[in-house]
Image 1 (spheres, rainbow, N blue to C red):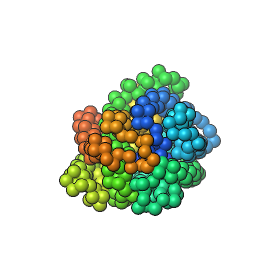
Image 2 (cartoon, one colour; image 1 turned 45 degrees about the horizontal axis):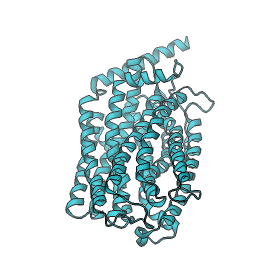
Image 3 (cartoon, one colour; image 1 turned 90 degrees about the horizontal axis):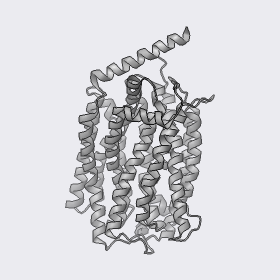
Image 4 (spheres, rainbow, N blue to C red; image 1 turned 45 degrees about the vertical axis):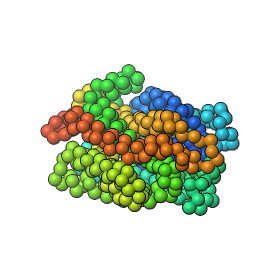
Length: 475
């Protein structure tokens, strides 16, 4: 089997930086931008998020199947990566830039709804083919782990850039001193986010181009059946391990998204200084970097299954520490950051493991169902992330509606005196994430079966089938 050069693996991974700049800005800061800069009602967003996910339930599997059946001189994945990155960058910029609609205007709500849905569609165009390339690089477990780890390294870099720099650069680009960020008016907040979104969009296209130009597709298997929603649904429903994965990964990812999404509200509204979030996220990014050592180190004496359970446990301990600091010490940002570093250590390695699991689930699907649906299976990764974000959004916006979070004030500090809202934000910041991880851990431990002897049986059967097909083609 041809060995993939390290240079090419790194070139591939670079693409994840741009994807996560767009991804991180959308999932971590869009809510704050919409509610505090554009004064969009939380009730509207509570309705919009699930509707967008209903469409994604149709769009994502369809896109996965389209990618599986793409044949061009560039391959099946790379044309979609560059096309999706370009379109997603345009939509990201427009989503974070109000063309001039007044607060409360029905046209503002229409504009937000259209580009909210379009962001998910264009993100799918780039995200599904990018992550679907992993099994085409290698079938051997250690090589897959290395490709996944490199890609997650750059993905973490993109997330780190967004989480650390966004609070500071939004203030800088808006012309507001960091110390006065909590007093920033909605217009200045919107101006800062608008300029920063354009920078992220341009970076997305640049990094995607580097990834596409420096990689070559291997081990590509063409599907035999024509696409239909019935076949796609059958593949998903009958792959029991994919369903199990979707459930426990969605719940654990929701715990992470809750922290990344609500932390901006916590530091701005409860603590009164959004720049504190940069210190908090900086320590979290240190944990994300260290997480890249978890699989290589643990892989020497632990199975992938044990490593994943170690990752979940570590993340849960870190989040539990955050809860203790938040409730017992008043939320010192450095102490919170130290605990978040531990949580991020587990979360980062959890994400790498999940990517490897999907590659195994592709093999399992071929083993069980007789057909290989690589991109369709990987499309579920993006869909489950969107579902996790939707679950997080439902919890968050429901809490805002229930506690009377009011955005009619001229400044962002509109809930400083709202004790109920502050309590809800604090609860979502510290209690919800560890609960989500505990539930996810229980489901994984009891229902996921692709490990040990059975995993080796699956890989051997798929490799044997591929060798037989190669002999037939040569004959």
